[in-house]
Image (cartoon, rainbow, N blue to C red; front, top):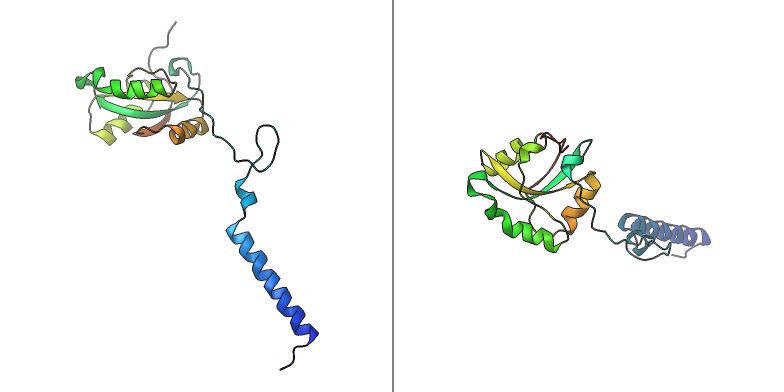
Length: 155
């Protein structure tokens, strides 16, 4: 059978549509590249370590990435390896009572089975910062909680 110019054009059009359709479904190398901080193109964005906040000074709800939880009866010594690991990542932390963040004590108690949990957590102003920390931190994450500060604020 002899091909006519019309059938050749239709075949080429169909091939182009399939190629474009496949490229739009699978993406391309350009989809993974984002401009860098200098406005250049073709470099992957680098996730930066977010700045932690002091939860006692937070005016609004904040997010805590809880990296370790122990029973208060076990004492803060149980949490020292996690405190040391966070210090190595540039975060100064101490054990604190999850009851100082609304909803955190109930959630962490439910997850761990501790009636009176004591935790090590890093507080952030936004869910994005908490997520960035959780992504970058190589240690464990027990949970991420959102709430307001409920303990007495320093005067």
